[in-house]
Amino acid sequence: MAVHTVERVTGTACVLRGDDIDTDRIIPARYLKCVTFDGLGEHAFEDDRAQAKGDHPLDQDHFEGARLLVVGRNFGSGSSREHAPQALMRRGFQGFIGASFAEIFAGNCTALGLPCATLSEADLSALMDAVELAPDQEVVLDLQAETVTSRAGTVSASIPAGVRMQLLEGTWDATAVLLEAGDAIDTTAKALPYVAGFE
Image (tube, rainbow, N blue to C red; front, side, top):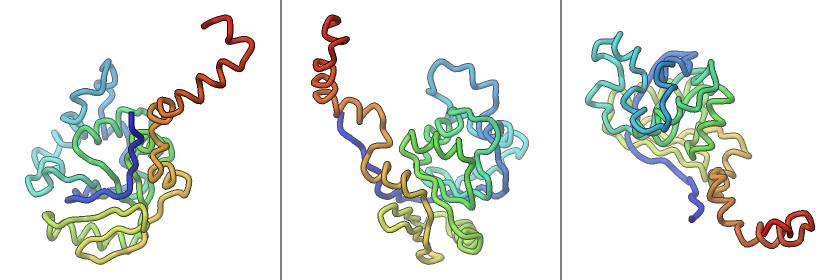
C-alpha cells in the first residue's frame, strides 16, 4: 500500500457562510448508527438543507462538484463525531478553508487526508465574495506554498506545522505507514524474547 501525500487541492469551491456550524448540523445524529460510512455524503447538512428548501449551498447547481468548502469561524464544533468529515469527504470535498476549525474536527480531517487551512478574516471574506460571484473559477489550496489562490488573488494560508508535514509526507495515513513498516515491525518483533514463542 503506497503512502499518499497531499500537496494541494484544486477545483471549484462552495461557500457556506456562518460561524459555529457544529457536527450535529453537518451530519444529524440519526445517521450515526451506520455500520460503515458509505452513503453518508447524501445526508450531509440534511436538516439544514430541508429547512432551506433548496436554497442551501449544497443544493445549488453552481456549487455542484465543488472540492473545497469555504466556511466561517469554529467550523466543526460540538461533538467529536468522525462521521462529520466522513460525510463531507463522501460528498466530494477534499479540503476546507475557513477562519478557524474545532480542534477535534480538524484532527479527524487530518486522519482522512483532508487539509483544514485558515485565512485572515479579510482574506476569507474576499475569497467568499469572489467564489459567490464566479462559482466556476478554480481555487487552489497549496500546502507546499501555504497559500490559497483564486480570482481574489493569492493569499497566505495557515496550517499547523505538524499537520502540514503529515499531509505532505503521507504520514497522516496511519494504516499505510504501518504497512510500509512491515519488515521493520517483523524484525523488531523477532528480537523480543516475549514474542518469540507466539510465532
